Image (cartoon, rainbow, N blue to C red; front, side):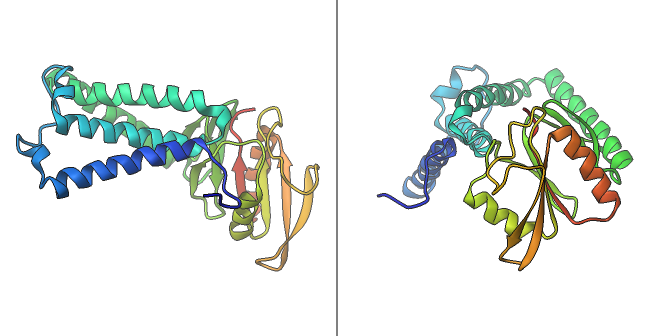
Length: 252
């Protein structure tokens, strides 16, 4: 059925896969009264080929794969990133499967725990050191915010300092503008990438412009700069106590 303002993107595939797996779980644990776990809840198997032979193990791995696919496709939903979604999903799934399988052996389990502990300690130390800072470092495909390294993906930093990964794109649509109107009160700062290829979709093509926010009934200042310059501007505005919503395109 045709729906206005609805377009297909890669994340629709992942959502369909996730829906199928939810249906399988419902069938196995409701319709079949949990027959899939009558042999036990064991996920890890001694041999790799056994994962295919054990329905419960296979279902768990399918859920892990679907979740990873859903994660990457939701922030790389544009069709131009389809190959990256596939590559990132396969690599992440192989790593997850290796951890699940190899953690049966004591030495690997200790190694995994040790590496995880080191990462947590180092990241905690960097966050504590730079928690009062803003953008600590920026280069192509790497931004360090409050001591937290963010690789490749685009970032949205709210005025209160919290951040999240957002859908990577070069041009904003009407739905994006509605989001900006809801969350940007005074200043919307856009980092358009290291080469300035992003940040498109606004009424005018200029570094600074003003639009009327019909939700707040106030003017909204929009600043579009290349990401390195935008990071410097963001730090300056935050030091001045300004209310800034920052969208950072982390590549070109």
